[in-house]
Image (cartoon, rainbow, N blue to C red; front, side):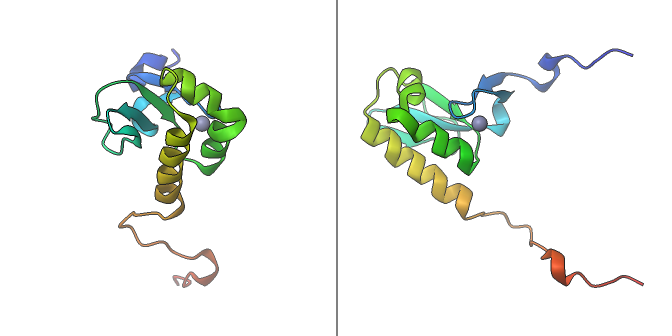
Length: 112
Ligand SMILES: [Zn+2]
């Protein structure tokens, strides 16, 4: 049995929050645009980008210590802009926009 190669998942990126590598498609992207650092929802903005898991813990971690890792990834972008972009992402993560209905665990009908 061969183990699947990491390359099977396509390009991977390192999260600036937890420093783990994940498939690029699973990560959110912050981009340094001429208008400032923005949460790059569609991953289409050109220029420097920082990748981060769309998870609150990673968003918090990325903002620690003056957002150092993010600033490095974005070549010294202003911390205030980074925090604004992180807030943008945090809102997105905290308020799921999924169209799938969420089933509450405690109220599942028993299928007989
Ligand atoms: Zn992460």
